Image (cartoon, rainbow, N blue to C red; front, side):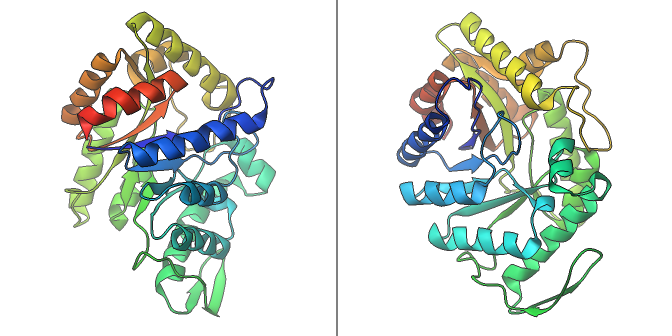
Length: 329
């Protein structure tokens, strides 16, 4: 099983220096590079202290400069907010500067506040996302790009640099809803699976993806399908549950709760007690031994072959590194 880290840049306590948030992440890059992690996947968010990393490509350049073997993932490049040629250039440049270590994850985004601030009509989010992905891939593979679409038209544009990885870096689409999974599977894309669905939903979506891939004439066998899980580890189960509940409360309050109107066609049902839902059905928490057991269970129920960890505390990251990752890889 491959193991990566979904690196958020949360600034929960604004009394601390923001630079300490970045310093902690940089320290983790060094550790991950040494200790057997496959990749760091950088989370892009805007206008929220939930995660103060508005440019995963700029942060990825820093991560690449500090590491030698660690792959650099975007989780995700929020494609609708970019001009597609600029996006193609930035990711390609990151691939060149990192020596061909980019994993490109692209997503549509879901925060209405982000769409409003960037002046992108929410009702166009899906169409713009899909068009921009198509343009990026053509920009990487065509010597000169010619394209006619509903939002962009290009005639013989030479997009440089080209990525070091040929024909392009490995690509994943963030897919949460059934319609997003269906579209990704219809195009033969690998998918990134989100940290907010329950373990049961994760298994259901993974099965659905495999079925839709087969129906479209593709195979999901042998693909890395990163599944993001929020993780809390402590010396006791009770302490780990406290960390998980605190993390769930912060996340719901700052970004994904019902008070934050999204742009997706179907809003996520968080139930009458959203914190309890996250702690009981979404997060993985406990002692390191029980966390390993829960991950192994997901290996069977959800065909987990790439665990994308979102550590909810520094102690969790330490125990992941020292005790969990060596037993999974």
